[in-house]
Structures are given as structure tokens and as C-alpha cells.
Image 1 (cartoon, helix red, strand yellow):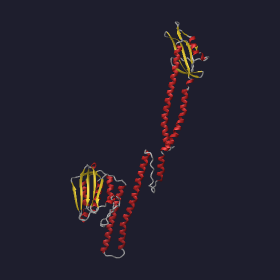
Image 2: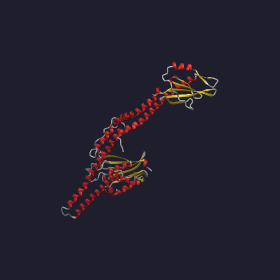
Image 3: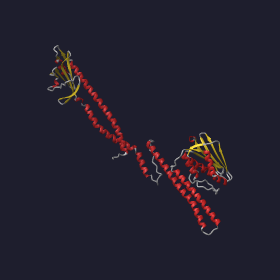
Image 4: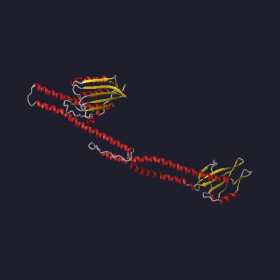
Length: 462
């Protein structure tokens, strides 16, 4: 199948629409000229017909007399650029008289034609004629035929030929002009093609130059650049994630390997074996927890999770997660205060909301000081249901607040070596909040504590 370039298709579509418009204009001009010329010829013939009818007089014998002298005097004395041909016939359709300019030629007398314009030929010359019956006392006593040459009105045919010849020439010229301007118009498209061909997985920094005119191509170029920005950002995050994940996974494996190597260097007593093995088990548990979190984060990063819409009793959900972490909170002797002013129900995904609440509670317990306090509140403010959890522990530095939702990022806890983690919990929370279209905010001061606030829009309420 023959394919056209985009430039040629634009030019072709332009000349198709242009040709229709030009054809309409040409037809309009041709018909106007044709109508005007025909009207003029018909009026002249009609005028001549009336003149010559005045030269006819009838008598009582059902015949008519032609005022020959008067008629011939007028014929010889008048100047006519376009000659008029006249013939008189009797009631038997026999020729009585005719104008001298006919010489040996005769006009045709058509049967059943009265006061009608007929196009015919006289000695191969196109003429238009009209014939009328001469009536005396209700009886036809003769016929008058008047004709006029159409040679001088060939302008109609000439105009027709001119239009037929110039029409394809104009279309070809229009196509070339349209193709030229189409080529200039789609120059940004060629730039997009050339630039996009330079973009590879190893070269994502190249961007398409924006056209000067802020038209559709400008918007297209801008959208492609924005898409490239998002792709580059996603690939950079993926590379960083892979690098961080490799590092974080390698660390516990190295610790386990080192511990095992120490154990086999020399015989040890049972207590030492148990301590080292128990340490390795804890590292394996931490490694297993990290893998679970990585898989969970990757699952939601691909945006393939189907969000369910189900009724959630938020109060019970919070209390269930507190029960899960009761052993850890008791080990640190934490005091957990809950304040629920009423029962709150949501329409959302119970599993995903539970993960968010669980990670926020786990985070609060982890960064609370021993014998500290955690405050959990559920309330309704304006058009949202608010869940807030506040700990009074190590806090977060102001410069670190905008980084806490990044994967594997952990704030400086060098003064608290007992606090361990993977740096994935809050990144999972942020990803799930984006997926469920929830708002999350954080307030924190170093060594004073941290407060997370989660807002559930009213539209999600039952």
C-alpha cells in the first residue's frame, strides 16, 4: 500500500478542501457568466422579434402584409455588431421574405415551437432563434423567425475551457505551496524525531527543544520532555533502590558470615554457641523482614495493586495493631494513650490501611525513649477524619524531614545504637497513601519527638 509522508498528507488534505472550494467558485462564476450572456442574447432576440412584428399588418383575407420598404430601410440603415437574421413564412410554412444577410441560406422552421428559444446552426455557425406565429382573428396566418449569431458570445465556452485548464494547474500549484508550508510547519516534528532517536537507556538527559510558537507542537514537545523527566527520575530511583537494597541485604549476610567464621575458628562452650547462633537467627529474621518489605514496596511501586472498597471500623483497626505490638511496647515500658471521641467508619482498603497504621505504630515505638509515652488520637476536623500518632522520643532533624519517606533513608541515630531498622517502613506508608489518595503530614523536633497525621477525606466516609 502506497504511503505518504506526514507533510504530503497535510498538503493533500489541504488541496482536497481547496479544490472543493475552488470548484464551487469556478462553477459559480461560470454559471453567472453563462446566465448573464444567455439573458442578454435572449433579450436582444426578443427585442428584434417585437420590432419585426410591428412591420406586419393583416387584412380581411386572413393574410398578412409585410411593410417591406420600412423593414428594408431599417435593415440597411442600422448598425449591428451582432447580425440579426429574419424570415417570414405564410401559413403553409412557405418562405415569403427574409433579411438580405441570409443570402442563399435559410433558417429552420421547427414544428410545434412557438416563442421558445432554440439553439441551432446556420451554415455551421451557432445561432439562437425564436419563432412566433402571426395571428389574425384567432387564426395562424404566418410565421416570423428571428435568429442571432452566437459567435460573439463564445466567451462562455472560452471561460469554460479556461476554467477546465487552469483548475488542475491551480491544484498542482496549491499542492506545491501547501507542501512547502507544511514542511515548515512540521519542522518541530522532525526535531522531535531526531532528538528522540538520540535518547537511549544510557542517554536520558537529552530533551526536545521547545518551538517558539506555543501551539500544539509546543505542548507535545513539553509533554514528551515531562515524560522523559519522569522516566529518568523513575530509572534513577530504581538504580538507587537496587543499590541501596544490595547494600542493606549484604550487611546482615556479612554479619552472619563473620559470626559463623568466628565460631568455627576454635572450640567454644555451649553458651557461646547459643549466643552466636541466636544472634545469627535475629539477623536472619531482620533479613527476612527486609525482604518482605522490599517485595511489598516493589509490589506497590508497579501500581498493580487493586484497591478494594470496603467498610473499615477505624477504631478497631488501630486497637488491633496496638495489640500486635504490645510485647515491644511493654519491653520498652511505654505508656500508650488513645483518645477516640466516637466510632469512625471508612470506605477504603482494609489491608492497605492496616499496613499504614501498623508501620506508623511500629515507627513510634522504635523511636520512643524507654519509659516514654505515645499518644494516638482519632477525630473529625472539617471534612476529614484525622488519625494522629505522637511519640516523645529521639525526633528528627529539620533538614531530614523531607527525606524520611525515601527508601532506605534513616535519620541520624548514632546516639541510639539500639535502634535498628531498614528505612523502608515510611516509604511504604507514603506509597500506600498516594495509592489510596490520603494526605500524610509530619512534625518533629530533634530530641523532643515526632507526630504523624493521617487525613481520610470525607468522600471516603460511609
